Length: 504
Image (cartoon, rainbow, N blue to C red; front, side, top):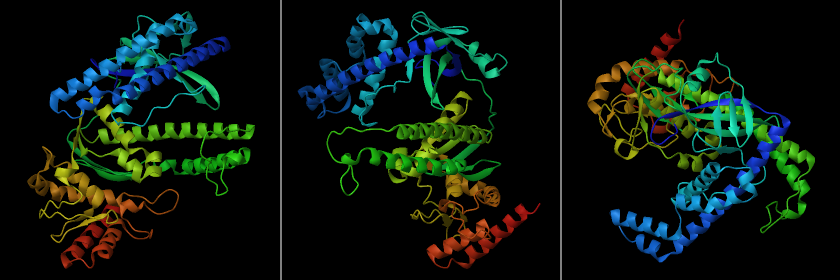
């Protein structure tokens, strides 16, 4: 969702450009790149002066509102503010860049550079990088009144008219064109090694709703590679973007090929042990290496588009289960540090952001609660016991007789969280019905399409012939020793329930 005051949504339309129009637009993107780099360099320079100032050092020792005011005054003294960067960028409108960019676009580029430096100052992201040639892919205006403007069916920008391809029979397009346009963003993408340009109309209002929203509370347990969802009438446990496995293998193959080509083209830049030498180096690229880079970029683009589609499909499935979604507030940056390869391919944080955005636009709500006060993975609702489990232990097995898959059980407990605390009474009351849902969810888990094993986080064991519940009971026995007789009886009941559910 965009816009600070009113809700917004984006309508994207492809543009039809001639060769001369494309050349002119590419020149303007290059001018925008130079403005952005200049503003980013100035922002980082002023940030350095801010951190070295005595006023900033004194503000760090304060507390409360006095500390906030002191930081604000220190930033004003060094010119590290958004509108100070606007004043700095005004000079670019009086040189050759003014022939390619309007003042509103220049100011938005300054804002973009300042926000990157500000996020770096707040330690919310790494140090921002300058953009190299042909790396500036987006520019946008401040309003639809001047600069980059939408004048149906074209986008106008300083005498350049770019025709949009509009399908008026599409309900999504019709809904977007009926709304007021706040501002326009131009986007360049490379598809198959060729440039494709799009106009993103940032419109006022709510987006067109395709997915229906259910009723009730839904609990989610998000992992680096899996998600467990439990609602009032349905539950499931799936792996994020399992269909991307084959593409990831091809990505790795092209990465190894590119590395071999780079080492062959630049033997002087590497040490005898294969590591890169320190210091400034000049890198040479052969034609074949550039072609490999294009193939890798195109494959990653397809992978990102496929991942976005899979996330959208899963979000729509979750939205049909309820209108209040409860999950733990996790650090996805910590996920990246610990499970970088899996998180980079499956993007659980992107899924949660997609769910939050679509839920808010549909009138539903996403509630995140802290793990410190709930401890769902350690809690037993029946007896109140709290026991830490290692990550390898994928089943909740308690002496009181409760046996359940760990992720599904945590998702169930999430539905019973109220005010950042687990409502054990509610969990105890609803558990008999939910227990059947969890057994049904386990019985519906199919073997991977590749014919391999389930993810280890499912806790279903290695042998294909083993049923989900039998695998879980055996895994729990191997981890915790021989369970009590009550647990063995409960595992048998779960096994019989799954067999009945699988019977056609």
